[in-house]
Every structure is written in structure tokens, then in C-alpha cells.
Image (cartoon, rainbow, N blue to C red; front, side, top):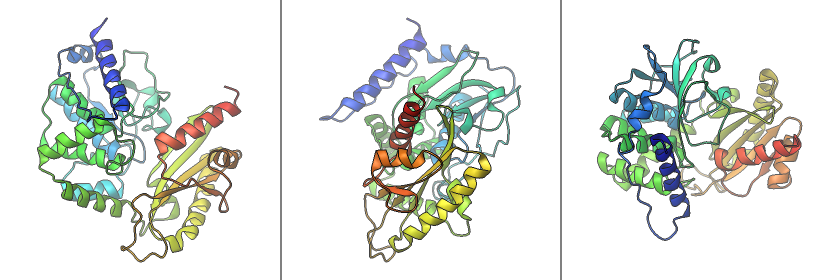
Length: 374
């Protein structure tokens, strides 16, 4: 059995252990480089130029920070890698730049056919930087479902159902036996906090180990982490000065599922008294976006965090409830079959907090494949 496959199997076993563990705390056991992952990396078609490490379009914290962390790891192993962003950083990421000093890389507008690159936090060409399909893909580091990114060259693929891609970058440092610099530790911690909703959403034992070790290294106590996350939420929910289209695009991803081109946004709202009017505004913006982009369907999950009556910031529900706005032929049927009758013009109330990657994408994928007879 080759060393790469043995290492992949070990990571899969560790992930399954974290999913099954109920009674005891999961402890991530670093492989370091006993299995010679470095030998596997040497087999890649690196070429002589720079290899760009880049997250998905409309980048969130995990996309930016996983690219930064993984580029630094590859550079420490002797490869000419640089982190890039596939778009302007969002407000949450910019807040973390000020609060923790995390690095935000420059935007990569397009990839040329001669370029080499590594994907983090996505594996779909439709979510990647322009020109990705024509460039040479060397690696994928991702925690989502398997996308359509392929390569005719040998491909190093690191994936597991964990809460954040930054968690996978953490495990990569451990498996390659490389110490994590404090500057990178801040980025990885930020990505974990963001993508797991401060350790509340799809937070596995591997995420817990990564978070605990990074927080200890940075001497960040629980109270400080809570304060950092509070600032992240406030920054991400500040839509002042933005058009409704910009609000939708502040956290939106595009997909091609069973031949259907669609988009899924993810937003938050804190004022129950204006919630319906906000949903109506975003619906109108989504309709314009769908027409302009030629999408068959478009969705947006909106988490409402407040209980009426609401007087900021005194009443905030700890566990928000997700509403899903929809538009396009067949979108209503998919949402109502999953979450019950619509409660507004074009939206449903799920009755609980949903995750885009763990809940919405699987629901939409299953429905579209069934409609296509797959």
C-alpha cells in the first residue's frame, strides 16, 4: 500500500472516530511525517513558477485563512507558493485583520493556462477564480462535498467532514511535522471560529483539538474568544452603505448540480421588527441576480437572531432560526418539500438553525438529482 493512500486512510479513520465518539473527548493524534507525506508532494507537477493557493469566490474567513495557512506550510516545505484571494475580503475578515492582525492576501483576478494553483475551501470550478479550469490544479484542501474539479496530473487531495478547512490545514501542519507560527495560528483559529459559528455548527473532535491547541498557543482564554467572535458577528452583520445585491454577495456561492446552475447566499439579521421587509428586499435583489447571471434557481438562508420585542443589543437569541428565500422554477417545491409551507412571499421557516454546507446543499442536491432521474 503506498504511503499517500495509507495517510489518507488514517485521516479518514480519525474523522470517523470523531463522528462516532460520544462519551470521551476526541484527541487528534498527529501523523507528523512518519508516512512521508513529503515524498507524495514531490510527485506533483510544481514547475518553476509560483503556485497560487486560493480559496473560493466571495471569500469568507475560512477561505482566506486556509489559503494563507496552507501557502505558508507549502513554503516552509520548500515550494514556491503564495496565498491569494478570489475576491475582496468581507467585513468579518477585515475586522479580524484589525483585531488579530491576520494577513489578507491580494486578489487574484484570473489564472492563466500556464499557472499552477491549489484550491482551499472549495472543489468546484464554478466557485473558483476565473481561468481555473485551464490552469494546472495540484492540490485540493476542502471540507465540503466533492465538487467537479479534476486534473490530468497526480492530485493531492485532503478532505474530511470537519467544521472548517482551517482545521484541515492545522492537521496538515501536524502531519508534516511543521510548527505553526503564531501569525498563522491566529488565521487558523479565526477560520475555525467563523466556520463553526464559535464551535456550535458541525464542530467535530478534530476541530476541538485544533481550536484548543491554537488557543493555548496564542494564550487566548475563553472570555477573549467569546469577545472576538462577538466582534466577528457584529462586523459580518453590518450592511451599512451596501446595496441589496452587495449584501447577498457578501456570503454567496454558486453551484452546478445535476445540470442546474444555482446560487446559495447566507446572511444574518438581528431586528425582528424589520425582518420581513429585509427578506423582501433580498428577494428582489436575488431575482435581479438570477436574471443577470442566467441561474435557474437561487436561494438565500437568513438567520434571524432576535426575539421580539427587540431593542439592540439587549435581546439576542443564542440559537438563531433559519429562513430560506427562494426564486426560480422548482425552487418553491424543493424548499416546501423539505421545510413545509411558505410563510412569506417566497420563503420558508426551517424552525431551526441550518448550515449551508451540511443542510441546504444536500437537500437541494438530493432534490435536483431526483428530478433529473439520477
